[in-house]
Image (cartoon, rainbow, N blue to C red; front, side, top):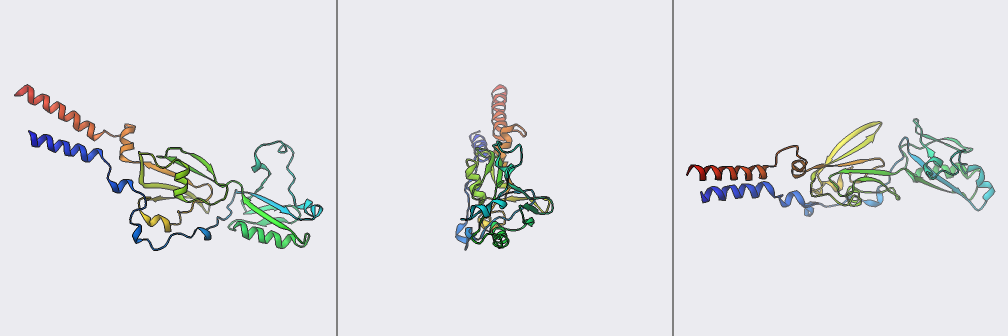
Length: 250
């Protein structure tokens, strides 16, 4: 009987504990030769983005025609997105005086240079600043603080997003982090294993605007939700019942 109870104890221990491999982030870093270059990444503009475009110069009167005037009804509105430039379904914005400007697939710097080259005909010392106003990501699932996060500098990595969400919870599956991303008008889904260093050279290391990060529940999380039986609890119940039967029939 002592051997039987020892065997049950070992089974309980094995089914109730997580292994080190399931918990640690970024394992096998010694095999990683290079990390993604943070300086080379720059997001590109997509359809339905809202751009902030500021035109400045020492010549205040010369700049005035190129400053977007808020439409009636938005003057007292607290949502600054309503006063930005919406990228339409054709990938363009409508800019004062210049008219239609193609922006989809371009970086902020490319748009700034293009606008500056056209505005220099009207203002010699023009300075153009472009920002993506709606750069946000959504982090849900097995994290401590799920939510929608606005990224001010338009640059965020998957580990940083997890950090913003308060890190993965104890029930979060580190080996199955789903990223939902829209590309060319279609939703694409990929799974990332954050315990491996392959993440650093993945195209999903840097997140794009409107990405959704979903951390799937681990086996422990699924069991706690009640969708599948808790194996250690069942084994404990089986042990109690078997012990009672042995005592009664002895």
